[in-house]
Length: 501
Image 1 (cartoon, rainbow, N blue to C red):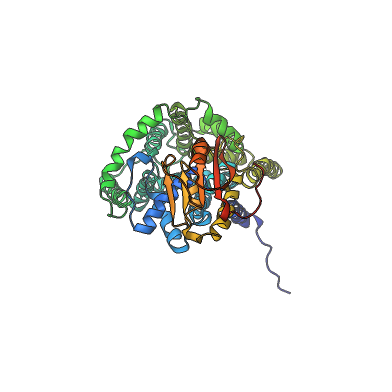
Image 2: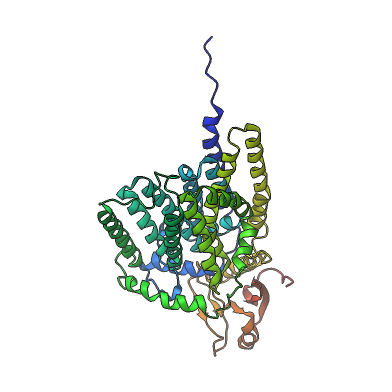
C-alpha cells in the first residue's frame, strides 16, 4: 500500500514556532484591553481624537511634543465603532503585534533561531505588552523603527529603489509619531558609520554598507520626495492644517527645554539600564554571545545593531528627562542584537544536535519567568507603581466612581445630567464622555453649587463643601498615587449606601 513520505520536521519547525510566537503575542496584547483604567495621557489623547472625529479637524500643536500619527490612525476605529478603551487601544495592540511579525521577517539577516528568539522576547515582554495595551505614542515609534530596519536591510541587500523609499517613509512615520525620532536618526547615522569603518567586507558581500552606484542621486531623490510628501500630509492632517508643517520645526525648542530642564521627570544615568535588566533580561543575556561574535567576525549587520543599541541607550541615558515608556524604543535594537546572539549560539553548536536541543531548551526556559512576569504585570498588578513602568497609572478603584454617577444620572436627567468637574481633568473626562452637560472649572466657582454631580480634586474639596447649596453624599476615589478626587452626589439623586473610603 502507498504511504505518505515522512514529514520533514525541520522544514516545519520555523513556521510552527513563528505562528506560536505570533499567537501568544497577539493574545497578550488584545486580551481584556479594557481591564486597565485609562491613563492620564490616554485621556488627553482621546480629546484630540474626539476633536478629529467630531469636527473633522486636528491641529498639530508643537507644545505637545508628539506628532499626529497616533490620532490620525485612531480616527478610523473610533469613527466606526465609537470611543472605548478597546477601540482606542486596538491600534497600538495591532502595531505591537506587527512588531513581532517584522522581527520574524529579519530572519534572513539574524538567522531563523535568532528571529524566533527575538520575536519571543518581544511577544512576551512585560514592557512591550504593557505599552501595546496603552493609547500612547511609544509602540507606534517601535513599530516604525522595526519597519525602517526591515526596509533598510532589504535595501542594503538588493539596492532596489522601492526599499529605500520604504525606509525613508518609515522614518517619516516615526517623525510623525514623536519628535524624539531626531535622537534615533543621530544614533542610526553614527551606527551606520561604525559599521562602514569596522565591518569586514568579506563577511557580508550581499549586505554592503559601502556599496555605491551611479543611481544613488536618483534613488535618494525618489526616497526623499516620497518621505517628504508623506510627512507633509500627516503634519497637515491631509491638507486641513497646513500650519502643522511649520509647527513641526517649532516643536524642537519646547522639546529641548523639556529634555534638559527641570520637569519633575529627571532620573539618574543608570535609569534605563536598570529597566532593561528588569524587563528585557533575556535580551541582555543573549546580547553577550552577540558581542563576542561581533568582535570575532566583524559582520557589518552585527556591528550596526550593536552600535545602534549602545548609542541609543547612551543618548537616552544622558538626557535628564526620562519616562519609563521610552524603554521600549531603547530596547528595540537590543532585541535584534539578542537575536544575533541566539543565532551565534546555534552556529557554535552546529552539527551537535544534542547540544543544540539543550540550548533551545535553556532559551525557552529563560522565557518562562519573563512570560510569568508579563502576565502578572499586565493582568494583575497593572496599577501597582512598585513596578517602574507603572508610571502615574490610574488605579483600578478609580473606575468604581462611574457606576455611582450613572445611577445618580438615571435618577436625574440621564445623559443630560449636569456634572461639574473642578480641577479634575483626565482620565475623568474620558469616562464622562457620554454626558452632554459636563462643565469644567479650573478652580471652584464663586457662585453656589446645586448640580446633581460634582467631582473635585482633593485640594479643592474643602472649598467646594462651602459652596454646596444642598445636602450631598461624599466619597473619595484614588486617581493615581498621591492624587485623589472627591465625588459629591446630591442626596435626592443618591442611590445606594455610603462606602467606606
